[in-house]
Image 1 (tube, helix red, strand yellow):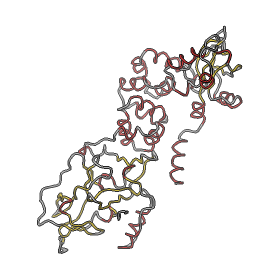
Image 2 (image 1 turned 135 degrees about the vertical axis):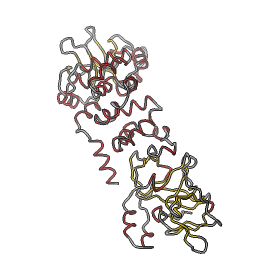
Image 3 (image 1 turned 90 degrees about the vertical axis):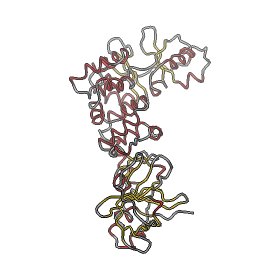
Image 4 (image 1 turned 60 degrees about the vertical axis):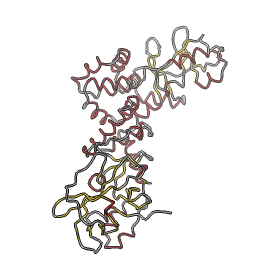
Length: 421
């Protein structure tokens, strides 16, 4: 059986009355305890009586209805209300504020908070992020109560921001954010205020790898905003876990006077890769390539190539193609991971190699890179030294898309998608 919803906006500022209807005070807010149940229970009310904000336990409330709350006890405890750890005030802390929709990976605004009286008592069941609550407030009396949520978001799908309530001693649980893709988390950070973004970054910081993945997905503006607020040691720790090409992009956002210090704090292998990438113009193949890839020689076996993939620390998108070198250490062709898996481990790579792999020179511009990848239907393209022909790095299709699409495209798309839903 579905529960009857009660809108928070019809309770806040409502009179608190005794059983005979005599006025006692006015409801200022409702108190919930989060983290103990899927739907947070209402533990009490903040009621203004005689100019003081007092606590009224939910056990002393006979009924909560639109426009009126009935007090059931004989007397009111006159002690001043003080928030306890784990408690949030629905109107003050959550209403009209951003919340995270964990199902869609989007920020929503709590235009209304919906409550219901279930088997275990009063609880928060969901949030209405639509426009109907605004319409409800414009309608007179009981007519407004007929306006029900069109798209109620269940509280189980929601995570509130709580850093603005330090006395609550709450934080966003890392495990909830970890359900999302790093790109979705980055979208949240970009759509949030700086304080909210910091709260998200702090939460994912419980997993250093996820934190690095999220930073890789952030736009340049937000990367600079967050990395420049960190110490050199913290910035270096973050960059040490990022792909070298992403770390090079990020360190270029660090204040000029700090770059050398941060670079020196990187592990040696990462530092050398980053310094090498920084020597190229950012709008060339060298400026966007990754130095992490797998090469094998022409006389290698399939088993050798698979072992090279297993031992590589490159990201997965860099490993689905293995490049094959000839006697002059130039690219002779490539094999895909699928080719390798389907072949006999003892077979020579040269028996399954796909010859005539396209390449680009390290100084080619990004338009040339995009045309080459389009002409040859490639998702991975090797970047070579113009003189020696040796492979210096690779470019993946996502690198090209990220650079060629206009800045802020993902945020604009997310806004359009949300508005169309």
